[in-house]
Image (cartoon, rainbow, N blue to C red; front, side, top):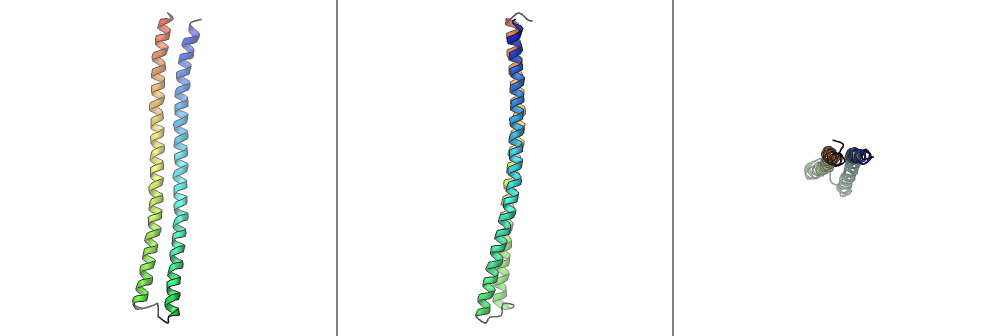
Length: 141
């Protein structure tokens, strides 16, 4: 009859370790999803930034044209070129931020998974110690 409590202690340790591993994998999966989502959001935001800057360039060209200024030469051309450069930089910044966030999420997932291995090992070792002590106290070994 003393075998049952000892077996339950051992089973609890195994179940705890399995739960810790499953939780770590779930966190890693969630982080991978969040990483993908960060890239997708950055792509959408980057497209919006690009569209906004194209609109601004078109407005600038229209304002120059309405004033009778040739936008194909001189200062107006430089202004339009500068706006195009600023727009491209703004888009790249948005994409870079998304890539950085994505990498952070991936790293967090890897850390969660690694941490779950440590937690599972701790559960198994602690359970083994308790099982041994309980078995020794029950005279099983």
